[in-house]
Length: 176
Image: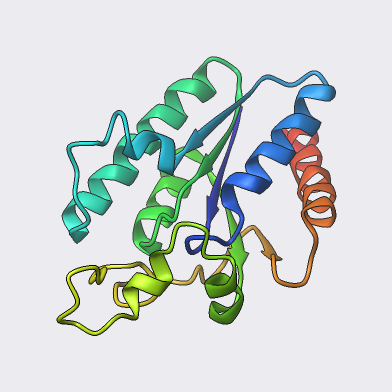
């Protein structure tokens, strides 16, 4: 069916948008599965750390789940940071999974920091609470070069983004 890779930094709104879009698609009669990176980090991927190799394996496993769910006919919303451009592009090439990039400026992300991650990432290096590998702060995030859909969650409301993305998804479904 259709797989969307919702990518962006922590706090950009990936899960919020996936949930809102899922509700709208369900109302239209579509089967939808959300593959949420945070949820799977605590279950299927709890054995993984945050090295580049582990991050790549985390995404590989999420992509596998997404493919299996799409085979059942579901529209799959894969909501994960998914930091590596080559991995996102490879998944698009192999499965047609479209890239949805949610941009949000760092100052806004820091204000939204419900998990306290950004606050801990900017602590002095010697601080035992410091996070040394937060994607987008002190670890790599490849900004998508050619996303299929882009939203700026600092400017657009969740309702506006959901409406725009729903229209995009319907166009993709009708194009098949």
